[in-house]
Image (cartoon, rainbow, N blue to C red; front, side, top):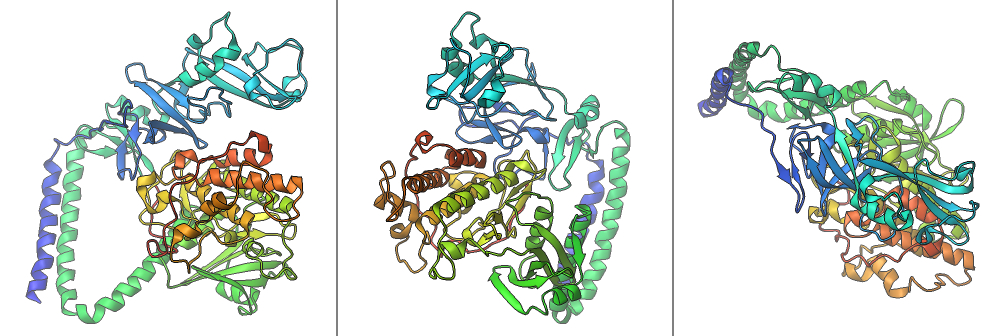
Length: 633
């Protein structure tokens, strides 16, 4: 017992000594490290390197995190990427090149530069080009962009404001995109049709100003930063202190530290006394106390999280209401890794699905993920959350009931009398709806949501076979400015997990990981079979994308199933090509979900054949089917 007490005493004494003596240390000053990606510019304040797991506190504007991925990458919300060619700190400027069109001989501009509320503005060195695509009618005598034209429709480019006057371009063209380039790349008497590609590949210049929340900090000679833990702006001062907005009034910092040191020392001494008392009863009390406090803390954390993210626009039910709603859990619909789903009815007899979560599994993260993430969404292709129950260890979530169940039962269909096979047109509609739902999660809502478990069993179908993305137990909520996130361990379902999720050597984990899972799923929709066989001894023999390459010549007229019409064959080929693009091994080679929607809507003739993925999915023994240990930047 005395040995145990001595071990308790040492750290407590150390705490008392270090906390009080640190109050006199004013030599510390926050330094901003300089980093750089391979062959890229130096990254220093107010920019910072967000690769991997950023520290709890870092200096730099939170919106100015850069990524290393075949160059230096800047992510502008909502989820658009740009190469950084240079950063000029003296003139507060940087040159960017659109990631989606870089190094293309005939780039098709997809979007304008979305500055939003960022502390950035366009340089006077820039000008705008206005592109009009797939125009069915247009004034005669104009030169079109042949490489971007489609069939009888033409595409055009103008210096913005110099379009033919008196003609309704927007009304006669499929799309209009404004793109920023540098003035010196366009000659006044030159041929814009020949110059636009070079100008887009050269990029454009943005200038930054002091971020609004950092004005007071920088004016007081501090360094502005951010706390991932507290999710707030910080001001790092030269005296070593950290303030909320300004370094003025720093003379009181030493006194504050001294007082804090005394308090911390007192806490340490109190901890010593408690430690001595507990050591006498540790064997008898430890298991019970540990279990009680761990369970209590989880429930308190969930309640606190809901309060901090509320008020929620959904109803909170008592557990007795849940039991009554499900007729005491009479009708079981299915079971997953985090709970059982029952059919129920509301007081107005509206059918609902009630997921009762496993009380003993996890730390409550899956419950928080589902309630907070889905309650923030409103989209035709996202399942509708009606309410939740949180009562001690009892947790449940109430959804709309989906008449046609999950997509999985139609893909793995072994009873055609009970579940008639879905038509190719309906499969295409379902694939497009899921893509739109993911596009919304990645770009359309105030908080970016990464699902991390896209698979057929998590796609529900309503009475009209409209797909709804469900089961957000593994989701991660991230700010729009974070593109690469940190995770501890893998999460997802074998056969659908992106390579970078289980092996970071393939790249950072991002929304592109959902794109991979989506690609595996629509390939499975095409093939009507699982993409990996658990019973197989050699996963390379059953890796479904390789099976497609082996048995189907994608570039030819595929007759995937006997009796397919020309239109059905085209839908099949389009889904295969889109799926194979989505499962490219390197995340940056995969399209965004916005591009996936475009590909599914467009003509098969405009789709290029992707290269063959060069890896296999992990075998079952390498990654657990479901893991939840992670944290979002």
